[in-house]
Image (cartoon, helix red, strand yellow):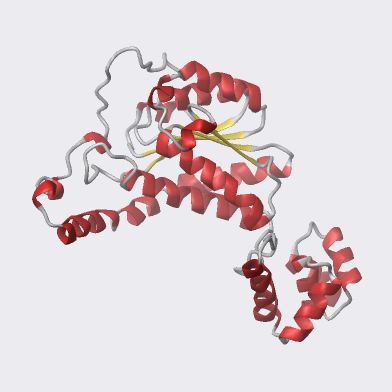
Length: 308
């Protein structure tokens, strides 16, 4: 990897996000409804741009699945909005999928304080990014850098350190031609183009990052068996809404009435996965638990074993 950019001198970034968006050239002259229309029309292009990078994204999904299966971790690294989105995605996985909190680790330039208040100069600290990953990552981990420009020193420093440790590395950038594409194992260059407000990458670039992270972590959880059909069967029922959702999922997935589902869920001690297998296979909860234990905790395989 070549010498990393530093924050010691002003830098003019030649990235699509820094160019002007022609349809918003008179943005300050528009009324409120017109401003919102310009923003909305620009936002409509983001999903298509994300769709164009599903091939490299799928590679990172498979890398992450393999890493987690062998006891490694996934790391997100970013600065500013990019870093906050990484923190958000990692934080949502334990309650949504009952994923161990050690599976996904998010690193943001400037530390936890940067979640609530901007620490703008922290993104220029390449050494800080490298030190953070050197402390937290190990060989076999997957490290995903998130940087709209594709050149954020904190992120590139972390990716360089990760590569030296023997991690798989990926970079999500809003510049398809970012130089750093040659420095990582997988490059995801999503072409979101210029922003409605020039250089404001919290807009389209960040929307693309959110879509990519949603898709990435969701696909990882599905591939790890934490989804049955399209139900999140490992949800942690921490409130009344989620407890009701668990019951609704059982009714929908099994075709049993609510009373049967409630009784089986109670017998399973709130273990939705065990209750689901018991109802689908027509067996007791104890048998369902045994089948799950013998088949990698996968619902379809456990049901097949009990009904064949």
